[in-house]
Image 1 (cartoon, one colour):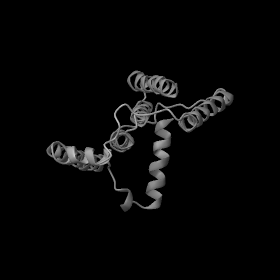
Image 2 (tube, rainbow, N blue to C red; image 1 turned 90 degrees about the horizontal axis):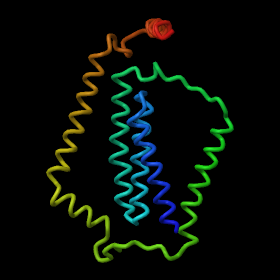
Image 3 (spheres, rainbow, N blue to C red; image 1 turned 180 degrees about the horizontal axis):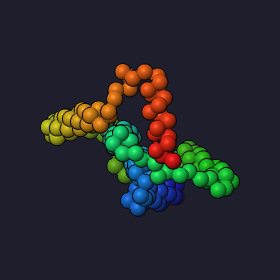
Image 4 (spheres, helix red, strand yellow; image 1 turned 90 degrees about the vertical axis):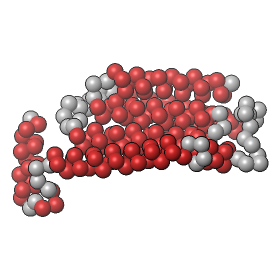
Length: 190
């Protein structure tokens, strides 16, 4: 019962987040929804008892989306079109309370229900983490290392491109010049 409720809840939330990522016109909203969707996908691994894969999902894929988030903020003025409005604070309070209640139910339900078990139990002689490590560093070593090199090159390229985009180095500017630049940016945004 718990697994079914949690599965459908996380399935709905995952589809909702990826729909927002695809359908929104705001880059920050899309990247935030994409990161949330990746975290909700990791919940499926936790439900299946694959805790290591769930944590790897959060670290690797959500970390990659956060790197994309940083690149988006470096290259685009993503906050220009964002207008925050909070028409009714009771809606925000109610949704936050509902989310907190769902988290409590999700964490308390396995304690209450003793009959939850994985379909494919962990190999007790080796362990789930060691199984993943053996496959990752033997069969998939070259793709793993290529992905690491590609991420490093992308990060260096992003830093170089962002550095070329700036007209003046902020570290070499005086306080007066920085304040004048901030005022001109505020006037340009109005």
